[in-house]
Amino acid sequence: MSVVIGMKGRAETQVVPENTAAAVGSGLVPVFATPYMIALMENAAVNAVQSALDPGQGTVGTRLDVTHDAATPVGIKVWAEAEVTAVEGKKLTFSVQAFDEAGPIGGGTHERFIIAVDRFLVKAEAKKAGR
Image 1 (tube, rainbow, N blue to C red):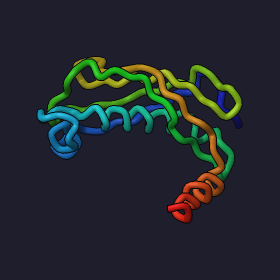
Image 2 (image 1 turned 135 degrees about the horizontal axis):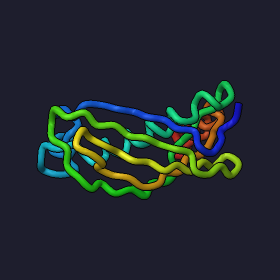
Image 3 (image 1 turned 45 degrees about the horizontal axis):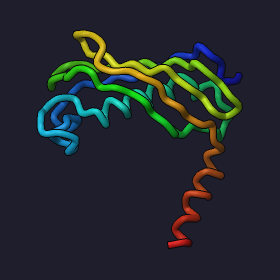
């Protein structure tokens, strides 16, 4: 199987004190933090394509262009949805959207690249030798 346009993924979580802007330092208020919304969008994108990859392959995020348009308080469920909109070799582009129980809270585009996990980790670890 290979990654194709139209593949979809989803990820969800609950807003808790630990994933608020106040807790992670991205703001001072106890609402769902933008970094966590972004992570949820990335997770939805991973979920959209991982089953179509060969064993030993994964994806890494390389670009995000998203907005966070509405605050979500502690105690509310949030989720993200991702859909593959373009496949250019190893480069994958996704439309991503985030929601809470009251409606949309953010959206935009996300790019990921298909990688061979072992080779990727070897290259990353090699940076330690150059310190």
